[in-house]
Amino acid sequence: MPDAGDEAMSRRAPKRQPVRHAIAQLHWALSPWQLVREQPPVDGARLLIGAPHTSNRDFVLMLAISWDARLPVRWLGKRELFEGPLGWAMHRLGGIPVDRDDPSGLVERIIALVRDDPRAVIVVTPDGTRRSQQWRSGFYRIALEAGLPVTLGFVDSTTRTTGLGPTIALTGDVPADMERIRAFYADKVGINRELTTEPRLADEAGLAARLRGERAQRER
Image 1 (cartoon, rainbow, N blue to C red):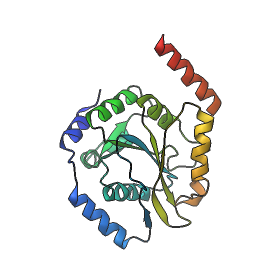
Image 2: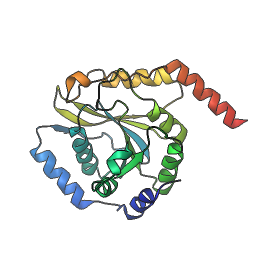
Image 3: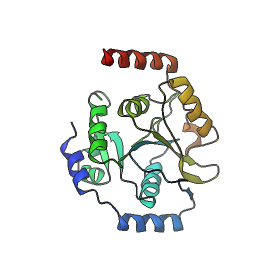
């Protein structure tokens, strides 16, 4: 079930956000980064990957990208971000608090949000800002179980470009899907270059087998 913050955000989310759009336009006019807009624009609910995610500055770029495109984004963040005086602002900016130690029920929350807003765009950063050898697999599970296509958002400090790449449908063949994702991000480098992580899950073949088993169990 969605929490009170999810429900309140969904009720007050405007169809158009002219103020945010204007702020985004000003940002891109002044920014040293070049915005790559989605071609062609995709409509409907989806999961948006933000990668390589190596700096907290990526958050500002994500907001500017989504506000420029007028996307009703919701982003997943660790619950600690929503504690204290900044918690209200994080909710207002579309944040969804996640307990990383106990993520149970997250997929159901996402499905409920998408049902309530069929244009919702859920932003996930699978690699995180700290040095890691692999991506977390949660984004794949969420997208597959919620039936959401995946848009490949990117930051590339080499070319100073950032924006939205292609949108793909996951097949359940984890190694094959991840190969497509790796191919897209192969030449992308994060703001903190040394923290850039290859899009690779811990056990892609094993995850595919587990997902097939879970699906078979549900269908019995």
